[in-house]
Image (cartoon, rainbow, N blue to C red):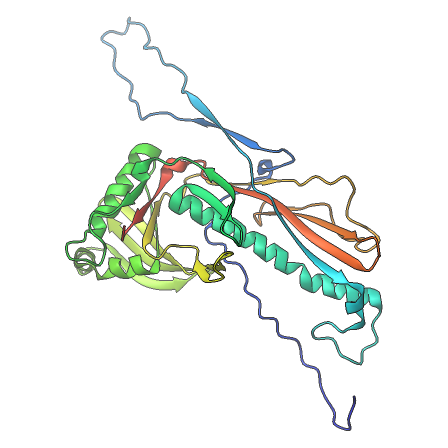
Length: 359
């Protein structure tokens, strides 16, 4: 009921948690990675660092070379479908931020509700992609579970055991050797992946143990040699660039990552990056994000959403969404859905590894 007092409606406040995309942004999605198939395949060609052996005389014949062998790998992506249902009765109510005395049409209120509701499914799908990427880089295995803890989807990329290492002495304990542990894993990556590792991604606990370790402090205390520096700098996507460090022949960028998601089973805010782990990787190692289409027999109901496209694919944005819309038989409930089939693939799986600093 209106009173004699005057009132002013301020802009609404939406408490929204934008998904952090630090890990998933490392996975690239060129146009070829968008497909209408059930599965994707990759031919992996591996070669060695062979050298040419000299011949004894110029008249001798050529040494014969064989073509590099390759392996074929096939992957089936998981399916995500998220929807929002709007009941016709809610169209009699104002949407958040709307002037209660403004005269708007039912159609305008419907569109306003749709535009407010649609970002939530997209954010959930992006977090699912980030969770995939985080499991790939720390475990080499992806397991997506429901609210009861049941594994809905699982894929094992079969990383080498030597790339997933438990340190011999817990970091933060007497006698720990963080520099030696990192260098040893970098050497394994150099031998298997044929590239130099140049990036370290720390969990918070692992980073604290690293910078407080005796050998690390001694390394940075050498003022006559530019070994590196620690100068924290936020660079978006939930990640903090901590500085650089030279370990042996390797020069690393150091990062920590604070991105979180609500665990579907426990409901607890959970970090994408395990606090006790360290990812050691070559930043030029190939990681692929692949996106599959979700087929429909008929397009989304154009009577309600004439502007809704069949597919929103963005190679630059690293996303592929399949919108949908339908009305129930009563004509009183509208559902607007977004689907996706994202798969984060460690194509160059030998170019990264992970240390567990408190096994």
